[in-house]
Image 1 (cartoon, rainbow, N blue to C red):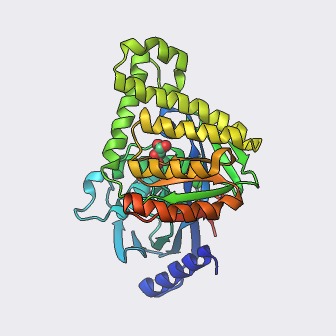
Image 2: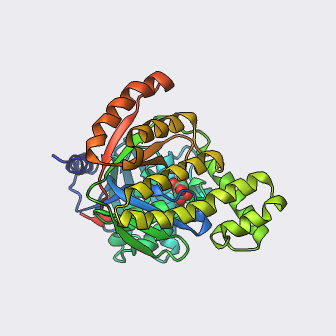
Length: 390
Ligand code: GLA
């Protein structure tokens, strides 16, 4: 049975066990991997992610006459109940609410603010997106809930509406001032395609993944600490740079303008801005290279992206730099590799020909534990569809 089939069965069986009835509708939303364009989304810039086959599944049943949402998280074996008659605000969140339930409360609050009247229902949620890996398990939870609950309310959200609602939940209920990339690609992903997202207009173009390339994700298994605070700090530094130039976002500053202003800028702010502005340029160029299956150019752009994240944006860690260097040494110009996601641990993404997958995995399984006392985990991924009713 497929990975997806196993997960759906587990969620359905859990539903039957917890609520003593069958679920009537199932929904799914995927995690994502970003191919290039890191920390550009909240600067109104470009990103090039694709949805992956790892997903969060929601099973649901309307309960007529009920004014509660009862939601059971299969992965934690925990039930959370939301009273639909009481106002839902971050301040009204009970103490000891588990982290996953903060996302649920945020999504529900956002839907109510958008005027949806949510019906009483029972829900089971479960997923196989690796958690804490930077592959957007939380965005997939927000997107499956946003689609599922809005459908139960008879007014399914558009992918963009769903993405904005999920981002708002992160900002208000989870304490992360994230951009829109994770939610938008989880909502709007398409099988076999990467998406070039314009995070200012929220428009996107599909870019077919070349048949000659595999998407290999390598999890460093470095425990990510203080991620939200470091993330929010980067965002503030970017905003400070935009303010210096008197523009809405760093999207509006060119590299030439940045260079001309270097002596007037705090060196740290200058470096942060240089990452964002150069990464935006690389992302647009990478979309063209991907479309043309120009692997040599893609390889160079991904290498530059990693260097910029390491030196200018300071979001990589030694174990990640090690993995990237080892993969690059094997792939050369036949593939690209860089850290993916918010940073401070998490995963590396490699785009490489099929014949290099096995050699890369074997090599890393040997050298990585010896150098960093950690085992790598490998995920061979396909560009997959976004949030949908099953
Ligand atoms: C996290 C955020 C995204 C994006 C990336 C970095 O995944 O949720 O909005 O900023 O980090 O590119």
